[in-house]
Length: 338
Ligand code: TYM
Image (cartoon, rainbow, N blue to C red):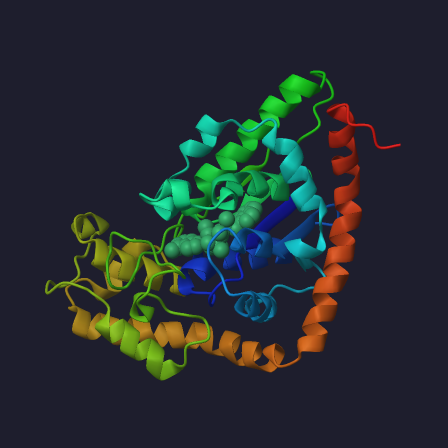
């Protein structure tokens, strides 16, 4: 098994990232057998697809490395690196742009959402973003990609690219690329904004009240939960009663994911109670889960040299693993390299 996934080092890690993806990275790392390997990376090359501040990106990359380690990624067991130190990602992306179709990229919802009405003014990087993401995964012959629901479409595209490349340039008995399987958790795959149950929790939401960040202190967490949008009704005793109550469903989902329970179990405890009782219990559970992560984050984030060394070491290991597939791709395309 080879497990690969990434996170953009823009903004702070939030509860959606943690419950939808990072927590599963840690679980997969911890359950790994001897023949398997995990590679986790900071998608800094993706971060330049939107307007950005270079100083912020530099700082954010190290901070995100610290945050992942604080969440439980162990850089002695998993390979932790940033894309910019493994140029094979960008090289493979270019090679795959010959296979990816404009029509496929045009259909990507992230492209449509982020470019909005101003497609002419969007960067080329934003359009070809999913090809780099395909390269991230295909470069390592990845079998499993733990992600939240919002990345599903990008991973389907990675499979389409791999399949078309294998068909066009390989013999049937010797395909070059492994088709990666997304691992999307059954619960918490899409955590919604605390201000609007129809929008996902996101680093780019201008309102900080819409998300819980892993580095938030206890007071901030309790305040954000208290102010979270809900409704005046009591919680139902059955999940069916949460239909058409997106904010209520989201808060119950978060509670369930943090407590390691099903939504039914949460409602068995809280059914019949209003948000005045449920919200403080949810806030406390968040504080309990996040406090050890944020204190570990604060310890790690000051040691810039140690973080640099971790990323450099991870990148060296990633480059070693990337070289054979990249060389085979050049070769399959008939590109002469001496
Ligand atoms: P990014 O940085 O937006 O998010 C990192 C991970 O967090 C998940 N996630 C969520 N899960 C549940 N609820 C939410 N509200 C929520 N918000 C974010 C995302 O699904 C993701 O798993 N394009 C990717 C980074 C990337 C990547 C890759 C991922 C680049 N190359 C290759 C996998 C494989 C991104 O921007 O994730």
